[in-house]
Image (cartoon, rainbow, N blue to C red; front, side, top):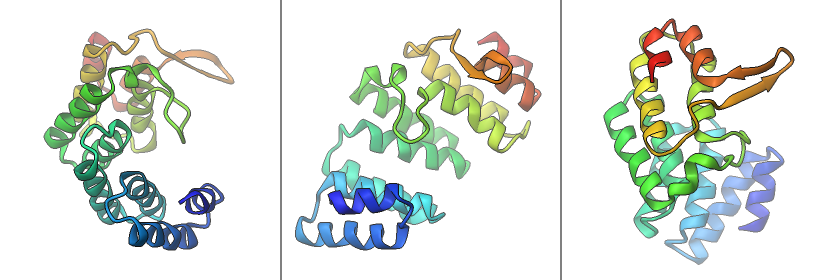
Length: 173
């Protein structure tokens, strides 16, 4: 398992996948290994398989907030917004402090990640789904005044997302 995590972090996704699968062959139902496999498959662009791995992780450990959060992100990316919202709620129920912690990988809090997802694929069609995720995070205690620092200084993550998506309703959350 530890070797698999290291290989994934180094970008050797094929070998990481093999090591995660070997760990799971030795210890079927190991939620952390399923989670690591899901992260590896997602990084390799294999979202459907990653979703299945996250499904298994939460089946083995229902309160696994990070697996639920990653699962929700994949569901949202696939356009399954209502299902993603339910999964975000499950993640927040499992770990209410999730909204205030920086996530491994992006190093940002969930609100910042949701807002920045607009920058990756700007689309006014995606705005209502992203807005619902943002509202859900705010309802659970995310900081409405959260900022992202870049070369221009401190920028509001909400106003940035609203501007890129051409979605003034996001500024009213």
